[in-house]
Length: 300
Image (cartoon, rainbow, N blue to C red):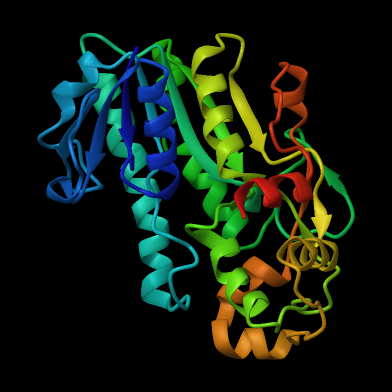
């Protein structure tokens, strides 16, 4: 299978590309910085501007599948008005460009995977959320709704479309876990806010494996939650992390301090959702890391 991965040089994209090549597939990476991506056996790279199909549209006709992972990193800095606009436009423009390229192609891919996030469900407390739960109304929820809709038109062209709502991806090389590790290693780990917020997580290994599973499974269509089946409250998450690192768990970070330091971005760690991957489990996907301790011990 030849897979076009938009955002294939990013954090999650790199993990997926490695899995695809390991499995014998050929990959074409769309990147805004093609010179920074190392082309190697099974992988080719094409440049694009991130918001139009100019210069690469013809490549869609060579692809059996497309994976759209494009979007500015939510956790890369404070959410100023300008940055929030970039967060929105980076996602919507990329999706619309990909959909337009598929529409104009004489040969279309069989499947398109569209990335999204569990922020789709909004900020809730203890309610268990599955793919059938309604969308929320806050900024991230509205963003996810529009993000998912950006490639919806390909369904009318006979392309199987899968939307993946990803939770907190765990890897020591990036993301939230990398940021959490530093205070714990300096014996300063503790709950963030009141610690009662739900964290719905998934290991990077299972994230890449789930994307592969959905690419190959013709019965997979529509929305899928990419989270491990056992979400935890932040305080339980932190305790397990401390035990795996053999560090104390004692120094809380109050909510007001996080809001002062992070601004609106603080909602990424202070608010959460209790999400389960119901449709993924129903299709028979087997998690390598269904429990947090198991996942952290494998990584750390």
